[in-house]
Length: 97
View 1 (cartoon, rainbow, N blue to C red):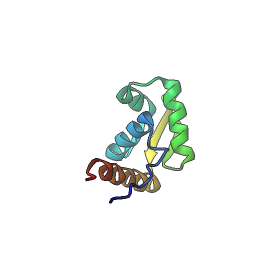
View 2 (view 1 turned 120 degrees about the vertical axis):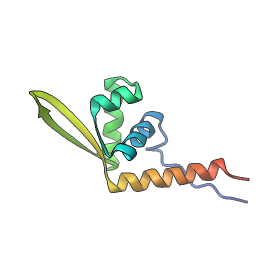
View 3 (view 1 turned 45 degrees about the horizontal axis):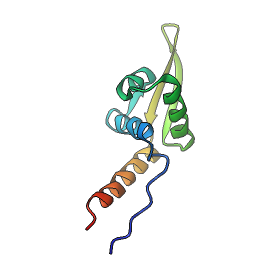
View 4 (view 1 turned 90 degrees about the horizontal axis):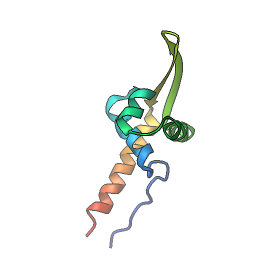
C-alpha cells in the first residue's frame, strides 16, 4: 500500500498556489499582473504574498516606477524546490492505486 506524503500547507491554498504557478513560469511578476491573473482583491493577494515571502518561497522587491510604487514578486530556488515537491506529491495522490 502506498503512503502519502504530507502536502505543504503554505502551497495548499488556492491563491498561494496560483501565485506560485504563475511565478514558476514567468520567474517574476508585478503585483498588478498577479492580481489580474488570479482575479483576487489587492488586500487578499497582499496577505498571501506576505505568507509566501515569510516562508522564503518568493522575494518581494518594492521600488518606484514613474513616481508610482511598484511591487515585484520573484520566485527563488527554495520556492521552486517547494513547488516541484508539492506537484510531485499531488501527482502521487492522483495516481494512487
